[in-house]
Amino acid sequence: MLTKNARLTLLRRTSWSGFVYIAFLMVGIWPLAHFFPSQPPAWGPEQIARYYAENRIGIRAGMVLVLLGSMFYVPWTAILARLVERVEGKPGILTYCQIIAGGCNVLLTAYPAGWWLLAAFRPERDPQLVQLLNDISWSQFLGVITPFYFVPISIAYAALADDSGEPPVIPRWVGWFNIWFELSLLPLVVIFWFHAGPFAWNGIFGFYLPFSLFWVWFFVMTWTLHRALPRLEDHLTFTEPA
Image 1 (cartoon, one colour):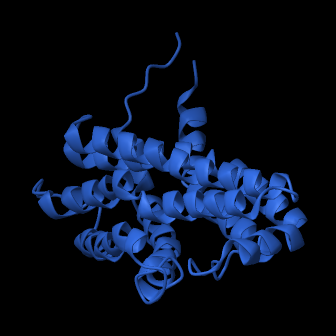
Image 2 (tube, one colour):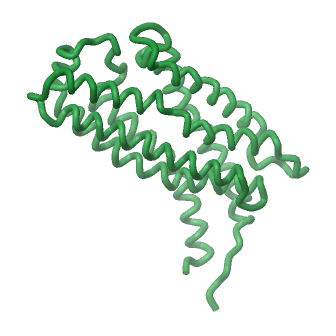
Image 3 (cartoon, rainbow, N blue to C red):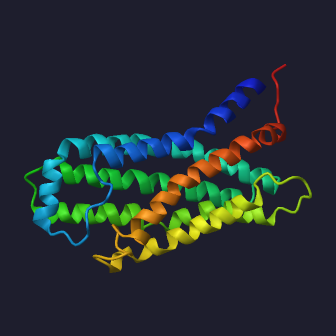
């Protein structure tokens, strides 16, 4: 059984897991795989295949890093659920929504990385198949986002519905920021309709705005967690060994 101090230490360390996740994601996608900016969906099979052949080593290294980073969203989900549960008073609907949505995001990070690795695995593969794997990767990474929606929704609801009369565990402005973040994610579901323009997966609404706010969101929520840590610790029920 963990002692009280061990549990508190674990809670504090877990509060940094989101930064580890986003750092692995950014380094893997940007300087290693050179996926920032993303390949235009209007590119043809030969152009896509050539891109993967010329950047094979970087793509492999970057996507392995993304795969490793995806596991750190597990403890990040756990501590966000703990934050929401502190507002609810006990595990409730919002807490369970946070856990399930966070678990889905682990898969929505890991599976696209696996598809990208497969696309770079055989340079001699038919360009049509490389393009298909590339389409699947970007579509899943950005477009199949709806299970993640309940991550910011549950945080926003907890922040704005808190009527305990105590100083809020989640500041109201953090709740409004999560609504803004959620709204920035909504256009991602239409990337399947566009090969070019602001709503394509290399456009302002299909990539740059949500991806940038995703980065900012981790800073905001890490600050929120560190601000709330003393109250999360006080709310824990410990059973010390005799």
